[in-house]
Length: 173
Length: 196
Image: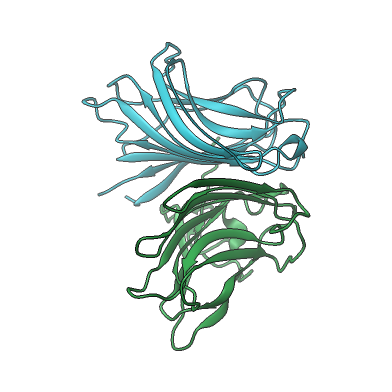
């Protein structure tokens, strides 16, 4: 087996409300790499979030540090959420050709003795009005169930055509 | 263009998603610029087949003291077409900064903090990802880096966009000074797996 294997790429040919990966294979860790754009009106950019196994209850927590819109810095922690913020995407007010990016690591996802934890690094360098942001964060799914499916969903609106995500499996043997 | 060698009768034969394209290590004398170009030959390292590129670097500049920021340019574009958002810390404080296209520092993508000479010799390291390099989108990139100067230095995350819809087929890497011998840069291509 390869050390790093591309499991599946979803490259949207039409706007979509979410992206789902449901064949996760048998690896040590997973990684999602990709970029997105949203049709949500209003903000210069939006977030997208991740859920596991279809769990929409308040079983998630996350915290992150960020630099945004110039010299602003902040750190945020939250618990009791129904998702983990993990990505950033420009909206329709900005450049249609610009996409946010994210690298999301999902560690030891098949181990039923641990809660699932992730780390993520999303960024956007050209949102509407020049809005920008870069983050580094972590998230917790308060469940020891093995992760069997992953759903990525925009905070509002849809992922637009051209948004793409690839799921990778990392094997140690 | 012919199929790359790892595709036989339309079937993937190489399961590795990361493909080693090339490593350049400075040897002998210091070097000002490191360049990678796509071979455009249909081989297993032809960039046209990759979704992303990843550059892993471990480098130092020849200036005494201080920190030299490494930067990249794509397809020889020296225009101010690389807006950015940075977040970094120097051991005492955290700083964020951004620049829209046309502003200062937007004629290149900064991705590293390569320390200058000192004793002991410090080295900066970084992982730069360039996303969806063959698409008609503007190209996004993010770098996580650390440059340690034995009690000082920088760590951070840089995000940039190259405002061009052209496929990336050339990367030039440099810093304000020459790179010291043993500075090394490895470029990987990341394959997608399109499934029905």
